[in-house]
Amino acid sequence: MHSIDWQCDESDDRVVIRGPETQVTFLRLGDRWIHHVSFGRRDSSDAALDELVSSEESDPRQDDPARVVSPVYQDLHRHTFAGDEGRGVCLLLTGRLFHHHFSAAVTVSTDPDREDAVIIDFDVADRCRAEVSSLAATYLVRLGSSELRDADSQSIVWTGRQLGEGVLTLQSDAGAILALAEAGRQSTRAQALARLAPDSFTHRLRYRWRWATTADSGRSR
Image: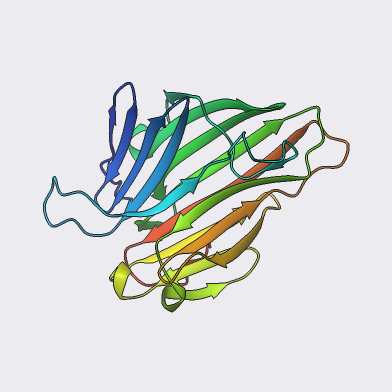
């Protein structure tokens, strides 16, 4: 199978992962790393892509310590991609918020079942000995209701003129539940919520963004 030629540019306050129609950017903002995801065709090899998906961050000054809006990441390291080194890029992120200790493996790779599709996989763990009533990852998606093709608790699919011929999908894994809400005329707030394990000090949240350059079902096979 043909592999996308992934590039990863790193500096003290920025990590940018690039593929032909994908760009994942991690930025250091204050004491934490936030991230943006872009998809689509470039006008030229060095052209920037518009940010389509952005993480929404927890605010320790206002948030309930038991309810996590998004995991907090304060350290980032690149790791060797398991298996085929040319297939993608893997990052390990860690951070703390109140009594929460977060760690996440983020993998950007080609879909093993479709060479024209990209998967950005987030595998998050929250280790916390205090009460946890909600563990989520929240995103602002710059697409309105007219681009929404399908939505349920396991998969949210967008397609339309703004995406060209592409299909964007948010998929849940490991029991996570997806939720969707409007965030203005041309934006949507998407959230992946963990299924919490009773009496456990470790909770897992796993979800993925999937971009296919040609129209398909938008769901994993």
